[in-house]
Amino acid sequence: MTYKETLDWMFLQLPMYQRDGNTAFKKDLTNIFAFVKVLGNPHQKIKTIHVGGTNGKGSTSHMLASILQEAGYKVGLYTSPHLKNFTERIRINGEEISKQKVVDFIARNRLFLEKQQLSFFEMTVGLAFDHFSSENVDIAIIEVGLGGRLDSTNILIPEVSVITNIGLDHTDFLGETLPEIAQEKAGIIKQNIPVVIGEKQTEVVSIFKNKAVFQEAIISFASDDEKVYATDLLGSYQVQNARTAVAAIQQLKGFRVLKNHIESGLLNVVKNTNLKGRWQILQNNPKVICDTAHNREGLIIVLEQLKRESFRKLHIVLGVVSDKKLETILPLFPIKANYYFCKPNIPRGLSEEVLGEKAMEYNLNGKKYNSVRKALSDALNNANQEDIIYIGGSTFVVAEII
Image (tube, rainbow, N blue to C red; front, side, top):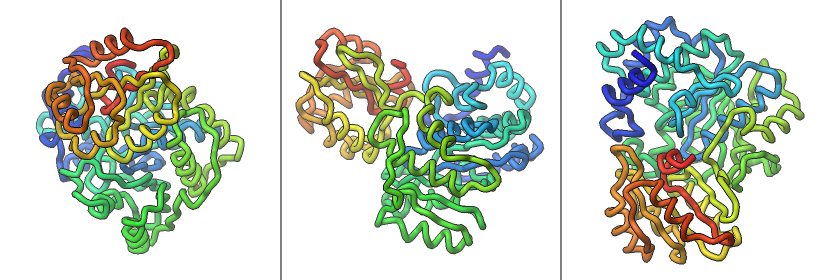
């Protein structure tokens, strides 16, 4: 198969949560254990840092990778979902896995994948472990896909576990309350492995402490550190992500990481890892900002930062996925803005008609578009140089315009 044919097979034949929703979610680790056994257990041959949480785990993972690269290490980075290209998910020192390696890997393992009926995410996790092992990385930063306890990445025994924070997201899988979700996220805490919690949240702190005691794991809270670390990632919310990354590095044993490595790593995240979509300024005059924040906790922070911007008029290009609980996010958006409701180009994308009608209940008014690009084009035509255009609501909305 060609690269395109390979991706088509991965995306369409087997379920993918980000695209299809709950039909792709499997509450079982049997498949991934079977797959890595066939692959020779590559996950046991590499050192890792395991990063979970509701918000900030992607940015924190990229910060960790950048710091360790600055310290001179060969660093693997596995994140999801991708914005533009599938190969973004698997990188070594910022370089994406080659298309040919993806093709060869699937070709070698296709019979097993079909017979075992692995999900898209399970096969991608296996590919990442295999690639990092074969390339002899010094360490790999592995981001949890969904939840923690039953996530396919949770077969690791890492050097450090990280949980950034807990928010109400994916409640249909992880639970309806913060404590319920925290229990799932705490599933990545391992026996005698230090764990760093990004934020000390009153509702869930006891859950993490109790799990750490049970696992005899040293626990620390990054939010106890009030230092502000400079980073090239824009967005006020990156302050806490930087603290979390530094706290994780401080718990990492066997690696020589100096103060200057931390400082330069945090200042060169984009250069070292090519991270996109986090308070990314696409142009000025008019200023166009995109951000992948998509749940209540993430949007609260991003929209607060948007309020601090100076502008004549605010234009918001907004799209979401169909399983998003709109009543939890739409009240956060400002009434005084011109809205461009749109549908992300995936099966899970919520109709612009449904989004627009629901938004009117919260006095959010605007036009409806069947594509993100049409919505953005109209926003650009309507905005003058003193205006701001914000694009968000879903990772997939941002992916279409970057």
